[in-house]
Image (spheres, rainbow, N blue to C red):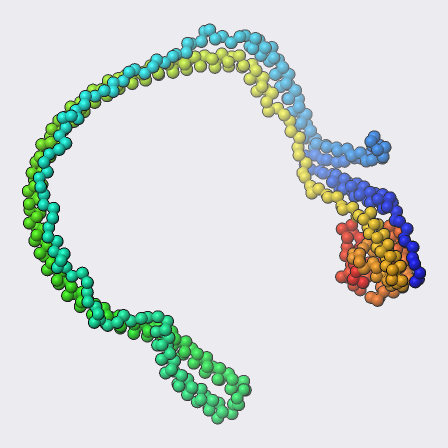
Length: 488
């Protein structure tokens, strides 16, 4: 077995291709048969019949399928009755052809129709008015109103002296932390004393350090102390806020005192300003009265001119309305004449096409429908196993094994190891013939020589490997088992 091995014989590719084609043909025949079920319903039945015939293109014998639809007796009678009615209606419609030809042989009479009305242009409208604007009064003397008053702004206090007020307190995280630190400093000696008392009590009760009871009691105390520290931290915020509010209250009180003093001085200045303002307003009111009298006289004159303009506009509007009304009457008359003409055209067209419309009415809607058989789930064609690819894969694996054996002068096991690089390969017992056991693999299954796909090969049987190492066996889409030789 250490000598040089010859290359394996080429596989029967033609046979493998013919085998794959035969399997594909069988799959197609099974699909055709599965998709032609016999269907029976209250409306009737649908069945299939077959006969053998010769394909004129290939000369091969093929199956010829015939679909047979049979209606229920009552439904068949109804169909025959409908077909008879349809035939009678078609014959009746055919009798109308002479009338249709006679009506359409007459030319359309355009001479005796009512004449189409034509519209005249709109009447000329009046759009000129007398211009009264030169006589309008637009200006008069306004007098000299007093517009300035001593504002007394020089005596108004606009700033406050807050230099001697208490400083503005600062409220931030450091201020709260100082308050919290003071509370913690006061609490720490109490907590230490509580822990010392508990440790002494536990020792007197016989609990040793590290025992479960000792640790649980000490943990309960620490939990309560932690809750107290948390409450102290929570309370520190409120305490810091209270101290901050006290500082702000002192500063606000000093500010209010400064503000009251400034307001007193400003109120006195405001009183003097109001007295000066009253004297100026008295003089302006007299001027306003004179202004109102002058404006009243001018408005009276302008109203008289406006009334004259409105009268002229009303007169022109009445003339234009009369012209518009006449235009509307003319348009209504023209529309009426055109409607008469259109109606005469429609009546003449209706007379010409009446027989044709009657014939179409008889023929319309007389189609007879066949009852629909219920549908079913179509059967899909099974996947054809890639016999040709598997043959090539097996040949490549065997050739690789021979090359590896020649290169390494391997023994019988090396030949099997060369198949490992091909990963999953067909190894189903159903694909093999001339099986002969030649050894035993390390996992306990046999090593065989056999013929598969027309080629002598060596390997294991998938069904045996599946019992001891199911992880190395996988079912192909064709249904045959494959073995991961790389994992052996």
